[in-house]
Amino acid sequence: MPPRSFKNARPRSNNHYGTTRAKGAASADDETAEAIQQETAEDDAEVDDDPSSSYKVRAEVVCPLCLDLWLDVVATPCGHRFCRTCLRRSLTRCSSRCPLCRYDLRHFDASVVPTDVEGDALLHALMPLWAIAQREADQAEHFELVVGNRSEFVPSMFGNQGNTHKWTLFVSLPGLQHHPLQRLIKRVEYELHPTFQPNVIVRYGPDFEFAAYGWGPFVVHCTIYWHLQTLPPTKVDHMLHFVPQGARTSIEVDLDTSQAMNLYQLMH
Ligand SMILES: [Zn+2]
Ligand SMILES: [Zn+2]
Image 1: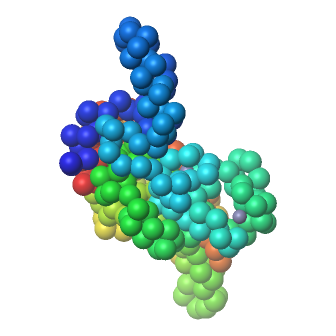
Image 2: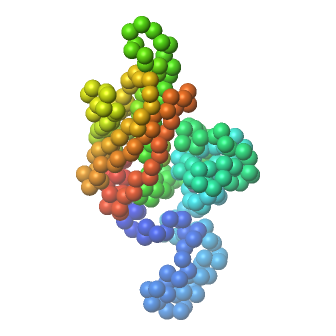
Image 3: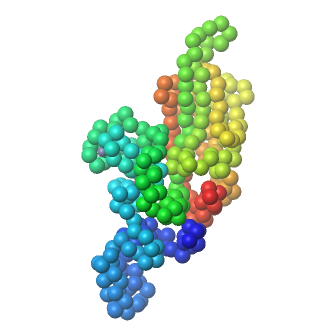
């Protein structure tokens, strides 16, 4: 069954494929007590087996933070796997330790580590493709947008006007990294310090990057224009940092249900 028709058939709130099916749902529809009892009996007998979805969610591929299927799975040095967004949130908002084993993850950046290939293969081996696509579509109601810069030191020499660094601005969508950026992003405008002429730079795909030489950091006002016509441009202020590992500014972009549907269609 293609994911989209399934999507229309299933209530959006039922994100956990039957494992957390609300037992009160039947009574809300004013059905008979017998129907409720039957529903409860089914739940007790086989909690993982939702007849409407006809597959079992496998505990091996569930994120311990959101209790849903891994989404863009990443693995920690301690060998635990989470959705990229879940782990990133936990590390930035709660503690810099692994949520499962308390391993020190101070030097682990969940935004940049590559997708865990083994975990991704396991997910695809255990779950049907449409369930994975459905999970991506559910997640699409908000997604992470990153504006950042890389930088490299350039030795001072005749003619480079005192510039010490070459820096490169970029944008990325970490939770949607399997999809080309230009499917979603139409163009990116970087407004630089007024000493740059011109100081408004427009960049198009595929990579939307802009590189320049400079000597002092400043705030870049960045505006991302989306292909989704109903989604207004997103503004991000990013402070340049001239450090070897570069710097990143991360925000969440929120979508309403129809925007999420349109986004899903753009991606597939
Ligand atoms: Zn998760
Ligand atoms: Zn761990």
